[in-house]
Amino acid sequence: MEKYNFFASLPDDLTLEAFEPLVETGGVLIERIVSKAHRTPEGQWYDQDRNEWVMVLKGEASLVFEGAEVVHLKMGDHLNIPAHCRHRVSWTSEQEETLWLAVHY
Amino acid sequence: MEKYNFFASLPDDLTLEAFEPLVETGGVLIERIVSKAHRTPEGQWYDQDRNEWVMVLKGEASLVFEGAEVVHLKMGDHLNIPAHCRHRVSWTSEQEETLWLAVHY
Image (tube, rainbow over all chains, first blue to last red; front, side, top):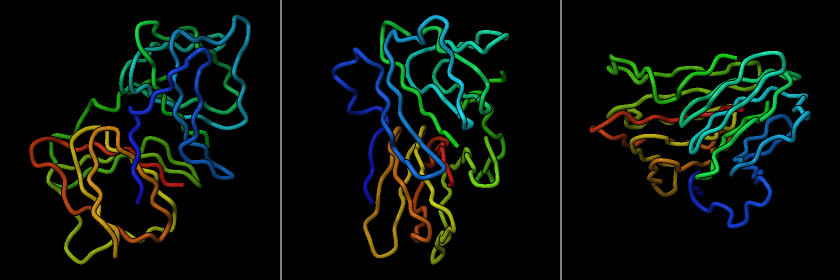
């Protein structure tokens, strides 16, 4: 049974945010996202067909929900984003990589 | 948007292993499991109808797969257990809580 480590093998090149599938089936995608100073471009929103449960496991980030508050996320903070709940990443740490675990379901 | 912390609010009473759903839908269960010196009783195996992706985020544990090797898991180690792949937890740390994140899908 092959094991992997979530905190290992970070991409050398983070010019673009890295989206790395860990498990992908018809219905469910589990992925690691590696950000460093990335944010969703101004005026753009994620508007997803699936629910997304997301947790920050390293670094820090801020999420904005349309018409609502900013949510600041640190190590271990998690939340559940219902499908079509419009949101954007307004900030991720410039000092270190931010690692997200996302489950799209 | 309500956030929670994965490492917070550990149960006071760990006489029994704690299984705590974070997200539960028809098809997918995301849960936190808190173990401390717990192991699957000798001779018993998990034999699950769904796949399970699991990661250790605190503590340490060992998993045994029927007819195969023991896999030792530390912080950040994750693996994917196919449905009906028989396995047991042969050891979890006595020194501290072991926190598992499990996605059943």
